[in-house]
Length: 155
Image (tube, rainbow, N blue to C red):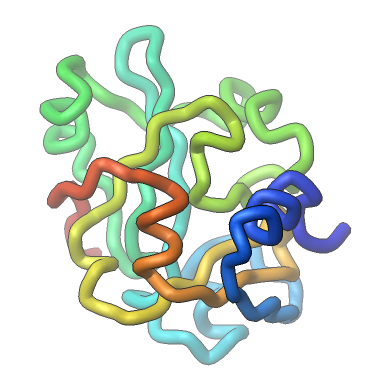
């Protein structure tokens, strides 16, 4: 599997410049960052959270964790990490846990931690554990239309 076809079509139709990056298989964001020689704070990971009956995509640096308390406040209900069984069907064109940060492609709202705005570029999974995309953060923000907030904690 290479980049998610849905993601490729979306980026290409919107004429977004991006660079594909292939790497050794990595199953955690920190491992992917190390394999690609990208600092953990520059690799964005996508985490599915649930608040009540609503699911959302939280996007944050690989070296950080989601503050469920802060995210729950943003969602208006207590939040928890979704189990793999709860979100596997939401991303049919992606390997489990390798979803890109474009929630609108999967009918999910997107929350991006403000710390990702510090870098000009963003790197993220392209739907597999071996492929990633590097693109301009401003282009990502324009396409993803995320709610930007502070909800990540170092650790």
